[in-house]
Length: 202
Image (cartoon, rainbow, N blue to C red; front, side, top):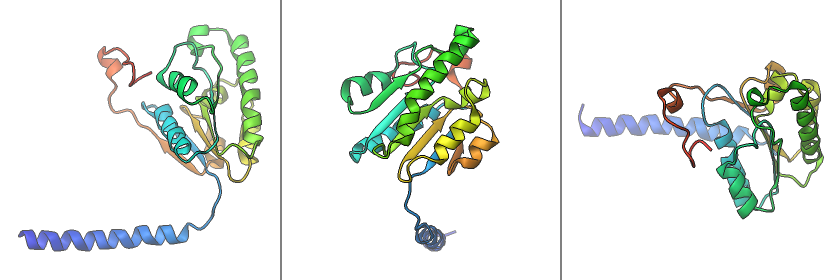
């Protein structure tokens, strides 16, 4: 096929694609906060959520971050937010991974205390974005009541967006979210014996 024909075919395809995109933009006329669930067995769910934190901060929005499970090992995002972004309301459960603690009652107690820090953010219209990192595990392990979480997400202020990360979480949680993205693992360096990398993995 000649370059001229390739160009014509490409231009026709892009014109068709633009019409589709423009139609979707025209149809999306509802202005409100969104609920996003980042799930799946692949790497990058929390990283994506912190990308949204950066976006929101870029617009001068008020952001809250609550991390469930994490907190025992220092992470780059924790260092950055605490040192460079003191305006971000940031809280960690601080017990580390539940498979390390092996203390169900202690983990439940910590989860409840952490949820009590998250709940006021979900009720406060001043917060533009609230990230609930690894919250799905609290549902999967039955540490927190799924219905209470879903109700809090559903009844949050209209213009507030919320991002939930973690594997699973159940169909009821997915149902209440506006956007659900699944991160699928194809390969992972750790399984090849490569150590977790500072600045990439934590």
